[in-house]
Amino acid sequence: MAKVVVMGAGVSGHTASTFLKKWLGEEHEVVVVTPNSKWNWIPSNIWVGVGEMTKKEVTFDLAPVYQKAGITYKQARAVSINPDGGKDEQKPYITIEYTDSSKEGEQEIVTYDFLINATGPKLNFAATEGLGPDNGHTVSVCTADHATHANQELQKCIDRMKKGEELKFLVGTGHGMCTCQGAAFEYIFNIDHTLREAGVRDKATLTWISNESFLGDFGIGGLHIKRGGYAASSKLFAESIYAERDVGWIIGAHVNKVEKGKAHYELLDGTMGAEEFDFAMLIPPFAGVGLKAYDKEGKDITDQMFAPNGLMKVDADYTPKAYEEWKASDWPATYQTPSHKNIFSVGIAFAPPHLISKPMKSPNGTPINPTPPRTGMPSAMIGKAVAQSITDMINGAPEPTHTARMSEMGAACVASTGKGLFNGTAAALTVFPVVPDFEKYPGLGRDLDYTFGEIGLAGHWIKHILHHMFIWKAKLRPGWALIPE
Image (cartoon, rainbow, N blue to C red; front, side, top):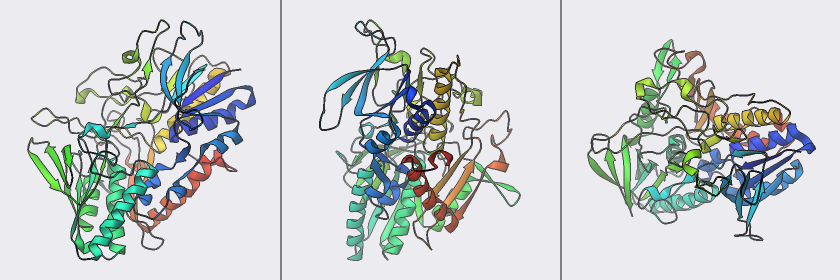
């Protein structure tokens, strides 16, 4: 009997573990280790953040789902990996620390035959002084609890505006190396919609602040959309939405400090500035969760298995190259680690070989550029491909059998710009491939026949349907495996 351990139960880890159990059956064991007791459909957190949904609507308990599936579930965080075993344990293993109340703080060794690192990101609020809801001056929508708190603060602002106050809202990225511009994009336009519904939009100044060098970069270097026989840039698409909704913008910005009511930033041209606010939601940068790795003798080999940011190295080309030398083939295909053929890393947990957007620095040497997004559809597709490979390897295949290279996959994104059955809107976009391939698609790097976008009410309906569809899938309800990633 083989034992597969999955560290993490987000989109990628949950996808991998549930398909593994479906394909492997009772003959083999699948173990999920995650510090969380609940699964969270993160794309809908932005609706929690404006009071259109509750935490209960975007989360569910993991334990009964895994029990039904026959998956062993440990509510714990992974602390370290011993990929070659140890002095007292011949098999490779991970060390975990329980987070549930009954065993909190207890440690345990969990052996494995195959290991999937799907730990996701550490929300690195500490990278910017004063950032974040816990010890800082900004709110967040990165978790359901954060989003609930964000809505509470938003409602206080609405009450103040109804009494005649004029307030400033600042939304975007809280560091020069952030990703997930899309979530912040959704949130600022949902705030705009909510304020209009409350009748106080005229009392609000909305400002977008981002490390993007142009609006519509989104961490993928922007894209072009085929419209009316022309290739329209996402820059034009985004600027039109911001202008139409009367949202100002500050771009090419590294937020380096947040004080109560004021965000300090450095721009790509080297100048420094500050923006005052009454309400701010700034996405933090992401990092690895801090896993350590040790060899059989107990020597620290973390730097061999992980990049400096704590994300795991996989089958990518990490050779330092000039931007002009980057290739689509640099990106990983199987997500297998080079040093250990039974370890894979999926979703946000794997280390990208380089940025997708063009790297930029201020004259002061400060990097200011979006880092690659790997959430949602790409994460699920990667998790499923790795599950297929491991299933085949357990059944005798010598190497991974499935690939999910981001430079060969397309992705669909439905970005809400306001929730409402009859007046909601969303920008529905598809991009192919996610990582541009300028050798295969000279000029724009993408296939315009499969890269397009529209904004309107239909997009909102799709977003709402997807919310219910993917929660149905994650709960392993009847037909779940037929719903595409």
